Amino acid sequence: MIIIDTNVLLAFLLTDGITRRIIADNHDVFMSPEHCFEELWEHRFRWNKKKLQDRELLEIVDDVKRLFVMPVFQEVYDPYITAAEKLTDDIDDAPVIALALSIDNEGIWTHNIKHFRQKKFGERIRVLSTQDVLELYPLKE
Image (cartoon, rainbow, N blue to C red; front, side, top):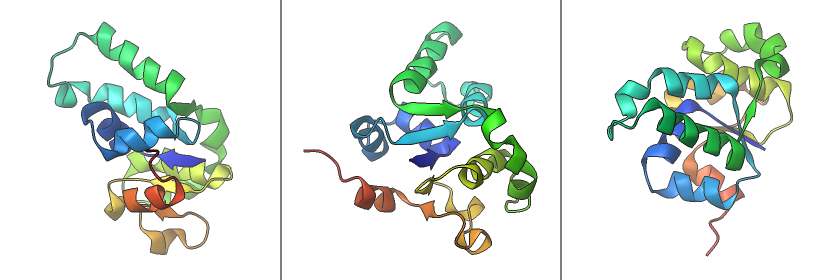
């Protein structure tokens, strides 16, 4: 399993590009803390360029959860939040890091490498670029 951060979820929703293809081709591989879906929703006014109604947006986000990215509830990773907060400068990234600390996984896929510093994580957590994910899960032809 690969843990994805909010910016990867956003790229999946907004662009018909490589991120969407990777996730759609491997829909049983990705998970994200429920917090990331909440963060996505809280900032919808910034990314909802088509001005879709909240009802439509909620249906889309629910479809992503149901079909492509498994949401993980806070109870699973909550015991690791304090440790995760010590590993990041951005408090919004703590749930992603806590989830990575709490379960077996292949790493955190993010488009924001500066907040996920491999040096701080050491061997405990692997930070994955899109290229890293492609090497693990090549696109299907």
